Length: 199
Image (cartoon, helix red, strand yellow):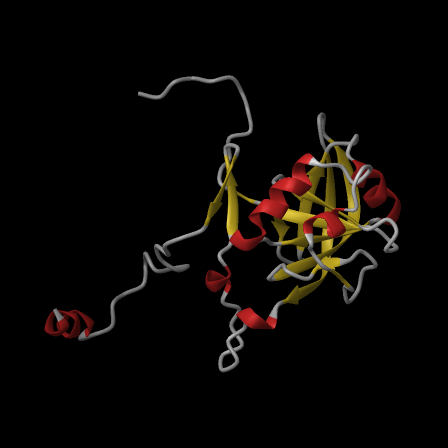
C-alpha cells in the first residue's frame, strides 16, 4: 500500500552536475545543481533551476552563459563541497583542485575533469518560486577523448563512473540493464541455440 505524502520534488535519481560560469578568471565559479535536464532535441535545449540568492545566479543572469559539467565518482567530494560552499567566500576551483579550461563557444569555463561539458546560452529565464529556471540552448559539447572509442567514435561514459543524486545522497551509476529499444528487439535467428551450446 502506498502512503500519501505532501507535494514535493521526488523525481529521483537526478544527475549531479557542476555548473560553471563567469566571463573572466576573476569571477569564474562552479556550483552543484541537481535541478537540471533536457527539454528539446532540435534545437538542443536544456535547463538549470537556480535560487536567486545563489552567488552564481547574478553571474548567469548578466552573462547569459553557463556550462553543465557531468561528474564522476572521482569528483564526488568536490561536487558536494561546491554545493555547500559559496563562491562569495571561496575560489572553488582553487579549493577543490578542479581545473577551469576554455570552452569552445561560450566565455564561461568548462571543468577539465568532467567527461562531458555542455556549453549553454540562456534563451529565457522563467520565474517559478523558490527557483528561477534558466532555459538554454546548447551551443557546443566538449567530450573528454579518454572516453571516446577510437575505432567507433562512440562516447563510452560507462567507463567514467558517472554519479547521480538521490534523496540527499550521491551514487555511482552501476550495472547496465539494457539499451534503448532492447525490450522490443527480435532475437536473431540461431541466437538461442548458440546461447544454449555455450551453456
